[in-house]
Image 1 (cartoon, rainbow, N blue to C red):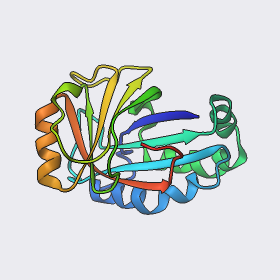
Image 2 (cartoon, rainbow, N blue to C red):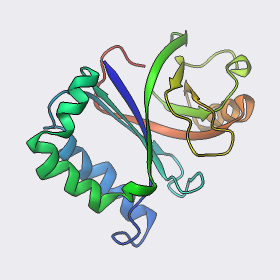
Image 3 (cartoon, rainbow, N blue to C red):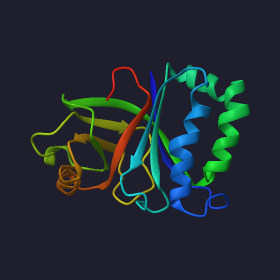
Length: 190
């Protein structure tokens, strides 16, 4: 399986507000992802605070493909060219966005995968508080262009906002507190 993490930048020419961007991404964009072949998982990590941003990024998505070759075939497919690519051009400032292949995922702790998810870029896994849900470390092929981002992302599921904020503060790095909307439930995730 090929797992890709993507940091999104809204296209400033098409949205008057971040609410408008999130409304389109949350409601309409998935319709263009669903028919693309070889996609076996799609997660929108929707910021709890819609005004959230790191530098230029305002949201985070994950795509899962059946293989690296499947990802290449997906980008060459008719549903991508006629549906997803035009919607991405409308929705996103593609040149200013960023993505990386997730080279490996290490499960640190089993647990629930509902509730809020903290994605901590550059967070310290030794500082994850006890309790809470599933914890994984995602090792990235490329380093995100954010302060302290390094090539690692901690994924920690929490029960509520207070616990999510406590986890984000404890592990450090740059954190996103998100509702992980599994549009296509990835196999063997998180």
